[in-house]
Image 1 (cartoon, rainbow, N blue to C red):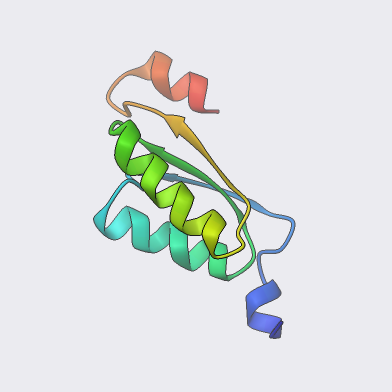
Image 2 (cartoon, rainbow, N blue to C red):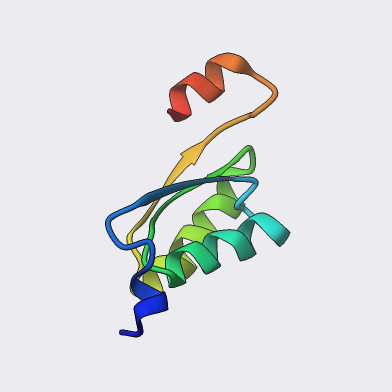
Amino acid sequence: MADSAKKLQDKVAVVTGAGAGIGRAIAEALAGAGAKVVVSDINAAGAAETCALLTAAGADALVVTCDVSDSESVAGLM
């Protein structure tokens, strides 16, 4: 594993909007750098798909469905 791939090893990254698009790309990049990734999105199916992609690539990831416009939902994410 290259040093750059270890950069975030033992760190946890929480990515909102990770169900698709830029959020998914960010989650993939962070996982590639060694982070454990909390995949969060209001779209549970999209988040699950991203999580499956990450874990299939060997990353440690989990899904937490969250609506960032709802403070109680965000509190549950943290």
